[in-house]
Image 1: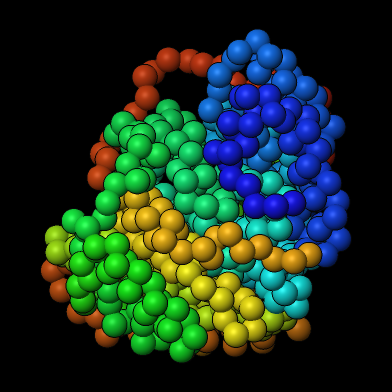
Image 2: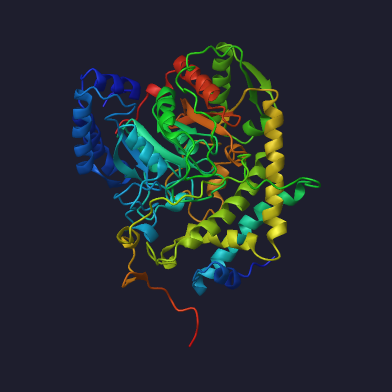
Length: 467
Length: 93
């Protein structure tokens, strides 16, 4: 499969250069070819997808115009899809078949998209490797001995391996951007509240943000357009209008000021730092002004995140008692147990003030710190991760693995900001390196604009793994 | 600081086997050492942030709407008994 974009496929479908059935078959063929190697998927939905593709072709014949009509989509297995097994990669939910659609799934279907498979992930989205999946790890398409990252690692690996052009992930703090970075694709974490969480197996409810994983920035913008918006079923979604995310992609960025913080560069591998320096030069060439900003040390954000996330996990996973659905609590594995236990501890009598309340106060300080930074700059640029992908097995007995891999994303997640990771080079051993741009709340338009301009100026997103 | 694994496991409704307790204790303490760094941050006079949306008192209209049928509600349960969910007794005889 050669490099295609969603935009191009949409146009090919419209002009009948390709049918939805043919497009689906391309995806199925690629899945059958690559899946034995990368194991990115938990459940496939080919038969139903084929019927939907035929239906899409009929609609296209009739001149029906829907934004994603006939487009195959791979969706992370923590999004409920009606009548399609949804496990969150945990044996607790190994046989769970939701009787309803998550809002994201419903919106994608309404836009004409076809859900063809559910992607692997860290169980309950607890992790940054996809190695904690109860159904086995996913492999990185760039090197099968390496991890894809996580928790949306199945989605990122799948898109990287061209199984489909559109992937859906969810991020609590790093779970879209980090696997996108390690797999060499684009991952967009929208502002908290921009995309509905309804029907997503909850991890940390004050942080969870569904978002797209795609091969290029414009595709991410097209998909976000269909995912975003107020939802009466999620009281934390915003009533702010959804702007046209593709409209301003081509805008010049010579009036932008992009902030960089030494704190985000001091902790990364030299190879990653080198590629980031080159990326800064590209942004300067595009006319953006680069300005140093000082940000709250990320290590404190990691501590805040660890406390808040574990606390919310312990509360959210309390509902799994095996009575109304799913298996009993005996089916939780080590990582979920560790998180539930730590969260229960920090919320327990005598420790609540010391840990949970303290974390909420420092959360305020981190938000103030970003507000201050965004009064001086439009966006913040940094490495997505301190390193390139780690080898399989790297997470074994590392209770803080994920937190340290996600060190540079946790501050922005805690503040509810939007961020995007996109490819900015490769390491000497051929693994992708990602840069991230962080924007203020509801700053997706400017974020996508800057990311798009960088992408147009470089060629990293056109490189594909050989499988 | 020693974390009381048995007490926390009881609160969390988890059965932790004895041979796992030591390892879990060690891992949790490693995490607690990390989060203890927060004590270095001065938060005097700072208010807590519980959520970041800026939204307040979000309510929906007080109108009934469609929900699951009984069949749908039991679709995934192994504990149906004559149209009810069967649960463990909480009151002793």
